[in-house]
Length: 227
Image (cartoon, rainbow, N blue to C red; front, side, top):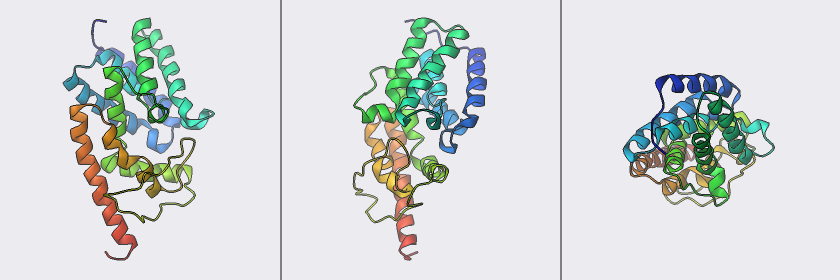
């Protein structure tokens, strides 16, 4: 398919629509998350030669349907993809384009990875990298605690009883919050760097991973009264 790109007018219509819709999402998956994922996707996609007419709409729509309104959390990607299809066809995207956007959204999520579904399209790899990167570093730390507060983790912030540089691989709850915010680092966040596809994504992931390690080491020392 010829890569004709996305016009500023098309992007504005998509942006305005999504920004209004995600007002109802939880704090960790609201407009600032969408905007960050779009920005990272553009950065990586431009370096990788991705089809921006597929990548940019997919990045905007990937989390448009809140997890709280679907039966199970993993279903939100399917619902988000269908929402993208309805809107994009209405503003002139072709059937082939929307099919690629749907494939990108469906195969880029963490839930898809947990089910053994890995992205094949370059655009899906870039979107997954962008989405995972926003769960790392300073923003990843902020988002995990915001999510814990919004959903009410049973054990609150959590106690860090393991070495941040050598964490245990804990099982993540795919249908609700993990037991604590700290638990979520060991069930997901500290493993994301190994799931990044692109060269630029790996570079960003390394920096963000190291930042999380430093934060956790400090958190552990403060809990133990060392600092």
